Length: 114
Length: 117
Image (cartoon, rainbow over all chains, first blue to last red; front, side, top):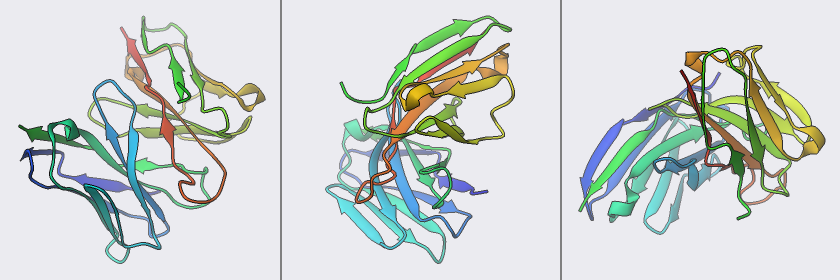
């Protein structure tokens, strides 16, 4: 089955700096790659996603890049703010299996220091 | 609030007891998922419903676990004879079959945290 690895497990940045989180996946059939933000005591919330027919997608301060050949994708957050502090999860989905069944990475605890 | 609703939010039980969690998905979503999340880990897939049909179950779902979605609306996840290893956050998510942008996006509830003593 699909395996998703995520790095780093913890990331601490100063407010205003950029943060980058990287993920690799194992199954080349995966075609949907969402990123979720999870705040303490809450469920994961989708912040951005990308499909395999696109190499890059941007939404304000957040961007995701996908390299299908290398089977890795990354989350970029620019101009970080203290409210960006949370755990971020990447995930991958293979088409045709259980609708949107996602395999998640282990998460990155992002801390933005004021 | 029209998001995914889960109850109870917290459940503390003694080993060997049965527990049941309920999930109310977003009303127009016909796909419903249960995931389990342990501390410091990403969510792990447990099972998936399309309408009332349970289409897939993970190997993680032992025979002590059962999930239902009668009438294709709310869902329940029951754990019988709980063990300490069942302590985790149980997350429910829903999505729509509709095509177009956002297809496949999972909307998660706040989760039900289970502690087995």
